[in-house]
Image (cartoon, rainbow, N blue to C red; front, side, top):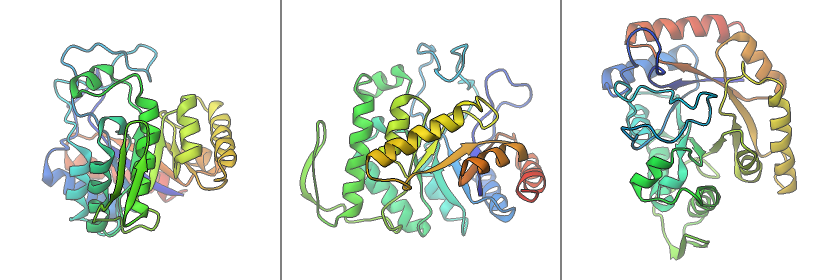
Length: 297
Protein backbone atom coordinates (compact mmCIF):
# COMPACT_ATOMS: atom_id res chain seq x y z
CA UNK A 1 0.00 0.00 0.00
CA UNK A 2 1.13 3.53 -0.80
CA UNK A 3 1.05 6.49 1.56
CA UNK A 4 -0.08 9.95 0.50
CA UNK A 5 -0.55 13.29 2.22
CA UNK A 6 -3.39 15.79 2.40
CA UNK A 7 -2.17 19.34 2.99
CA UNK A 8 -4.79 21.77 4.29
CA UNK A 9 -5.19 24.49 6.91
CA UNK A 10 -6.24 23.93 10.50
CA UNK A 11 -9.83 23.19 11.32
CA UNK A 12 -12.06 25.77 12.96
CA UNK A 13 -11.60 25.98 16.71
CA UNK A 14 -8.26 24.18 16.83
CA UNK A 15 -5.74 25.56 19.29
CA UNK A 16 -2.43 26.93 18.13
CA UNK A 17 -1.35 28.71 14.94
CA UNK A 18 -4.13 28.97 12.36
CA UNK A 19 -3.02 27.09 9.27
CA UNK A 20 -0.28 25.60 7.16
CA UNK A 21 1.11 28.37 4.90
CA UNK A 22 0.16 26.63 1.66
CA UNK A 23 0.40 29.80 -0.40
CA UNK A 24 4.09 30.14 0.52
CA UNK A 25 6.27 28.72 -2.29
CA UNK A 26 9.22 28.00 0.01
CA UNK A 27 7.01 26.06 2.43
CA UNK A 28 5.32 24.15 -0.39
CA UNK A 29 8.54 23.19 -2.14
CA UNK A 30 10.25 22.14 1.09
CA UNK A 31 7.23 20.16 2.25
CA UNK A 32 6.83 18.31 -1.05
CA UNK A 33 10.54 17.52 -1.32
CA UNK A 34 10.64 16.20 2.25
CA UNK A 35 7.50 14.13 1.65
CA UNK A 36 9.18 12.57 -1.34
CA UNK A 37 12.36 11.88 0.66
CA UNK A 38 10.56 10.05 3.49
CA UNK A 39 8.69 7.71 1.16
CA UNK A 40 5.30 9.33 0.58
CA UNK A 41 3.98 8.76 -2.94
CA UNK A 42 1.48 11.61 -3.34
CA UNK A 43 0.23 14.97 -2.13
CA UNK A 44 -3.40 16.10 -2.32
CA UNK A 45 -5.08 19.49 -2.00
CA UNK A 46 -8.61 20.69 -1.28
CA UNK A 47 -10.72 22.79 -3.62
CA UNK A 48 -13.13 25.66 -3.01
CA UNK A 49 -13.09 28.61 -5.37
CA UNK A 50 -14.93 30.94 -2.97
CA UNK A 51 -16.52 30.76 0.46
CA UNK A 52 -19.49 32.91 1.47
CA UNK A 53 -18.50 35.42 4.14
CA UNK A 54 -21.77 34.65 5.93
CA UNK A 55 -21.80 30.89 6.38
CA UNK A 56 -25.19 29.66 5.19
CA UNK A 57 -25.21 26.11 3.83
CA UNK A 58 -24.59 23.48 6.54
CA UNK A 59 -21.47 21.34 6.21
CA UNK A 60 -22.77 17.81 5.49
CA UNK A 61 -19.81 15.86 6.93
CA UNK A 62 -20.21 17.04 10.54
CA UNK A 63 -23.19 16.41 12.80
CA UNK A 64 -23.08 20.03 13.93
CA UNK A 65 -23.17 21.35 10.36
CA UNK A 66 -20.25 23.69 11.20
CA UNK A 67 -17.59 24.44 8.59
CA UNK A 68 -14.25 22.72 9.30
CA UNK A 69 -12.29 25.82 8.24
CA UNK A 70 -11.81 29.22 9.73
CA UNK A 71 -12.47 31.51 6.77
CA UNK A 72 -10.57 34.36 8.41
CA UNK A 73 -7.26 32.51 8.46
CA UNK A 74 -7.23 29.40 6.29
CA UNK A 75 -5.50 29.65 2.95
CA UNK A 76 -7.06 27.57 0.20
CA UNK A 77 -5.20 28.31 -3.06
CA UNK A 78 -6.31 26.90 -6.41
CA UNK A 79 -5.20 23.24 -6.43
CA UNK A 80 -4.32 22.83 -10.11
CA UNK A 81 -1.88 25.72 -9.82
CA UNK A 82 -0.31 24.05 -6.78
CA UNK A 83 0.01 20.77 -8.67
CA UNK A 84 1.71 22.45 -11.61
CA UNK A 85 4.12 24.41 -9.40
CA UNK A 86 5.15 21.45 -7.27
CA UNK A 87 5.64 19.08 -10.17
CA UNK A 88 8.55 21.31 -11.17
CA UNK A 89 10.40 20.96 -7.86
CA UNK A 90 9.93 17.21 -7.30
CA UNK A 91 10.88 14.02 -9.14
CA UNK A 92 8.43 11.25 -8.28
CA UNK A 93 5.70 12.65 -6.02
CA UNK A 94 2.22 12.44 -7.51
CA UNK A 95 -0.25 15.32 -7.12
CA UNK A 96 -4.02 15.39 -6.91
CA UNK A 97 -7.17 16.92 -5.50
CA UNK A 98 -9.22 15.62 -2.60
CA UNK A 99 -11.53 16.71 -3.87
CA UNK A 100 -12.14 19.16 -6.72
CA UNK A 101 -15.78 20.27 -7.08
CA UNK A 102 -16.22 19.00 -10.63
CA UNK A 103 -19.58 20.57 -11.61
CA UNK A 104 -18.10 24.03 -10.96
CA UNK A 105 -15.44 23.60 -13.69
CA UNK A 106 -15.94 23.58 -17.44
CA UNK A 107 -14.94 20.02 -18.38
CA UNK A 108 -13.20 20.90 -21.66
CA UNK A 109 -10.99 23.51 -20.00
CA UNK A 110 -10.36 21.22 -17.02
CA UNK A 111 -9.40 18.36 -19.34
CA UNK A 112 -6.85 20.64 -21.04
CA UNK A 113 -5.44 21.91 -17.72
CA UNK A 114 -5.00 18.41 -16.33
CA UNK A 115 -3.51 17.08 -19.56
CA UNK A 116 -0.96 19.89 -19.50
CA UNK A 117 -0.05 19.22 -15.86
CA UNK A 118 0.26 15.52 -16.58
CA UNK A 119 2.60 16.10 -19.52
CA UNK A 120 4.79 18.60 -17.67
CA UNK A 121 4.99 16.42 -14.55
CA UNK A 122 5.88 13.26 -16.44
CA UNK A 123 2.55 11.57 -15.78
CA UNK A 124 2.06 12.41 -12.08
CA UNK A 125 -1.41 14.01 -12.01
CA UNK A 126 -4.53 12.57 -10.36
CA UNK A 127 -8.01 14.07 -10.11
CA UNK A 128 -10.14 13.52 -7.04
CA UNK A 129 -13.68 14.75 -7.65
CA UNK A 130 -16.92 15.38 -5.81
CA UNK A 131 -20.30 16.81 -6.68
CA UNK A 132 -20.08 19.59 -4.08
CA UNK A 133 -22.18 20.58 -1.11
CA UNK A 134 -21.89 24.38 -0.75
CA UNK A 135 -24.91 25.84 -2.54
CA UNK A 136 -23.75 29.40 -1.82
CA UNK A 137 -20.57 28.75 -3.81
CA UNK A 138 -22.53 27.41 -6.79
CA UNK A 139 -24.72 30.51 -6.72
CA UNK A 140 -21.73 32.84 -6.67
CA UNK A 141 -20.13 31.07 -9.63
CA UNK A 142 -23.34 30.95 -11.67
CA UNK A 143 -23.66 27.16 -11.73
CA UNK A 144 -26.81 25.19 -11.00
CA UNK A 145 -26.75 23.34 -7.68
CA UNK A 146 -29.78 21.11 -8.28
CA UNK A 147 -28.37 19.14 -11.23
CA UNK A 148 -24.78 18.96 -9.98
CA UNK A 149 -24.81 15.16 -9.66
CA UNK A 150 -25.89 14.55 -13.25
CA UNK A 151 -23.36 17.09 -14.52
CA UNK A 152 -20.60 15.44 -12.48
CA UNK A 153 -21.26 12.15 -14.29
CA UNK A 154 -21.42 13.92 -17.64
CA UNK A 155 -18.23 15.91 -17.06
CA UNK A 156 -16.27 12.73 -16.25
CA UNK A 157 -17.45 11.28 -19.55
CA UNK A 158 -16.50 14.48 -21.40
CA UNK A 159 -12.94 14.47 -20.05
CA UNK A 160 -12.42 10.78 -20.76
CA UNK A 161 -13.63 11.28 -24.35
CA UNK A 162 -11.25 14.19 -24.87
CA UNK A 163 -8.28 12.37 -23.35
CA UNK A 164 -8.87 9.15 -25.29
CA UNK A 165 -9.26 10.53 -28.80
CA UNK A 166 -7.15 12.86 -30.94
CA UNK A 167 -10.42 14.02 -32.53
CA UNK A 168 -13.29 13.89 -30.06
CA UNK A 169 -17.06 14.26 -30.24
CA UNK A 170 -19.62 14.24 -27.45
CA UNK A 171 -23.36 14.79 -27.06
CA UNK A 172 -24.80 15.03 -23.56
CA UNK A 173 -27.52 16.86 -21.64
CA UNK A 174 -25.41 19.99 -21.05
CA UNK A 175 -22.21 19.53 -23.11
CA UNK A 176 -21.96 18.87 -26.84
CA UNK A 177 -19.15 19.20 -29.37
CA UNK A 178 -18.31 17.65 -32.70
CA UNK A 179 -14.83 16.70 -33.91
CA UNK A 180 -12.66 18.88 -31.70
CA UNK A 181 -8.97 18.48 -30.89
CA UNK A 182 -7.73 19.02 -27.35
CA UNK A 183 -4.17 19.22 -28.79
CA UNK A 184 -2.59 18.23 -25.45
CA UNK A 185 -3.23 14.77 -24.05
CA UNK A 186 -2.18 13.18 -20.74
CA UNK A 187 1.02 11.21 -20.63
CA UNK A 188 -0.59 8.46 -18.58
CA UNK A 189 -2.25 5.74 -20.66
CA UNK A 190 -5.99 6.00 -20.17
CA UNK A 191 -5.78 9.62 -19.10
CA UNK A 192 -5.51 11.22 -15.67
CA UNK A 193 -6.81 8.79 -12.98
CA UNK A 194 -10.14 9.90 -11.51
CA UNK A 195 -10.74 9.34 -7.79
CA UNK A 196 -14.39 9.63 -6.76
CA UNK A 197 -14.80 11.04 -3.26
CA UNK A 198 -17.75 10.92 -0.90
CA UNK A 199 -19.88 8.29 0.79
CA UNK A 200 -23.44 9.04 -0.37
CA UNK A 201 -25.31 6.51 -2.54
CA UNK A 202 -24.67 8.59 -5.70
CA UNK A 203 -20.95 8.74 -4.88
CA UNK A 204 -20.79 4.95 -4.47
CA UNK A 205 -22.58 4.48 -7.79
CA UNK A 206 -20.35 7.04 -9.53
CA UNK A 207 -17.18 5.42 -8.19
CA UNK A 208 -18.22 2.00 -9.42
CA UNK A 209 -19.47 3.14 -12.81
CA UNK A 210 -16.83 5.74 -13.64
CA UNK A 211 -14.02 5.94 -11.10
CA UNK A 212 -10.49 4.63 -11.09
CA UNK A 213 -10.54 4.86 -7.28
CA UNK A 214 -13.02 5.41 -4.46
CA UNK A 215 -12.13 7.71 -1.53
CA UNK A 216 -14.64 7.94 1.35
CA UNK A 217 -15.01 11.40 2.82
CA UNK A 218 -14.24 10.31 6.39
CA UNK A 219 -11.21 8.75 8.04
CA UNK A 220 -10.47 5.04 8.44
CA UNK A 221 -10.80 5.56 12.20
CA UNK A 222 -14.43 6.64 11.74
CA UNK A 223 -17.54 4.59 10.92
CA UNK A 224 -15.51 1.42 10.50
CA UNK A 225 -18.61 -0.75 10.23
CA UNK A 226 -19.62 1.17 7.10
CA UNK A 227 -16.38 0.71 5.18
CA UNK A 228 -16.88 -2.93 4.07
CA UNK A 229 -20.47 -2.30 2.98
CA UNK A 230 -19.55 0.89 1.09
CA UNK A 231 -16.69 -0.83 -0.70
CA UNK A 232 -18.88 -3.82 -1.54
CA UNK A 233 -21.49 -1.46 -3.00
CA UNK A 234 -18.88 0.25 -5.17
CA UNK A 235 -17.71 -3.13 -6.42
CA UNK A 236 -21.29 -4.17 -7.23
CA UNK A 237 -21.81 -1.02 -9.30
CA UNK A 238 -18.51 -1.66 -11.09
CA UNK A 239 -19.47 -5.25 -11.90
CA UNK A 240 -22.91 -4.20 -13.15
CA UNK A 241 -21.21 -1.66 -15.45
CA UNK A 242 -18.87 -4.31 -16.84
CA UNK A 243 -15.84 -2.79 -15.07
CA UNK A 244 -15.16 -5.35 -12.34
CA UNK A 245 -11.73 -4.76 -10.82
CA UNK A 246 -11.30 -1.36 -12.49
CA UNK A 247 -11.85 0.76 -9.34
CA UNK A 248 -9.57 0.56 -6.32
CA UNK A 249 -10.02 1.79 -2.74
CA UNK A 250 -8.15 4.59 -0.99
CA UNK A 251 -8.74 6.10 2.44
CA UNK A 252 -7.81 8.88 4.81
CA UNK A 253 -5.99 7.67 7.90
CA UNK A 254 -3.41 8.67 10.49
CA UNK A 255 -2.16 5.60 12.33
CA UNK A 256 -0.61 2.18 11.81
CA UNK A 257 -3.94 0.70 12.89
CA UNK A 258 -5.71 2.72 10.19
CA UNK A 259 -3.21 1.51 7.62
CA UNK A 260 -3.73 -2.13 8.58
CA UNK A 261 -7.51 -1.70 8.55
CA UNK A 262 -7.40 -0.23 5.03
CA UNK A 263 -4.94 -2.85 3.81
CA UNK A 264 -7.24 -5.63 5.05
CA UNK A 265 -9.98 -4.11 2.85
CA UNK A 266 -7.62 -4.16 -0.11
CA UNK A 267 -6.92 -0.42 -0.23
CA UNK A 268 -4.06 0.78 -2.41
CA UNK A 269 -3.29 4.07 -0.58
CA UNK A 270 -3.73 5.75 2.81
CA UNK A 271 -3.77 9.56 2.86
CA UNK A 272 -2.58 11.33 6.00
CA UNK A 273 -3.78 14.88 6.71
CA UNK A 274 -1.25 17.46 7.89
CA UNK A 275 -1.56 21.14 8.81
CA UNK A 276 1.62 22.16 10.61
CA UNK A 277 2.14 25.94 10.67
CA UNK A 278 5.78 26.01 9.52
CA UNK A 279 8.23 23.88 7.55
CA UNK A 280 10.31 22.68 10.51
CA UNK A 281 7.29 21.29 12.37
CA UNK A 282 5.88 19.85 9.14
CA UNK A 283 9.13 18.02 8.43
CA UNK A 284 9.16 16.64 11.98
CA UNK A 285 5.58 15.41 11.50
CA UNK A 286 6.54 13.71 8.23
CA UNK A 287 9.55 12.07 9.91
CA UNK A 288 7.33 10.70 12.68
CA UNK A 289 4.76 9.44 10.19
CA UNK A 290 7.47 7.74 8.16
CA UNK A 291 8.95 6.06 11.25
CA UNK A 292 5.75 5.12 13.05
CA UNK A 293 3.50 4.22 10.13
CA UNK A 294 5.23 3.79 6.77
CA UNK A 295 8.30 2.02 8.16
CA UNK A 296 6.40 -0.24 10.55
CA UNK A 297 3.76 -1.10 7.99
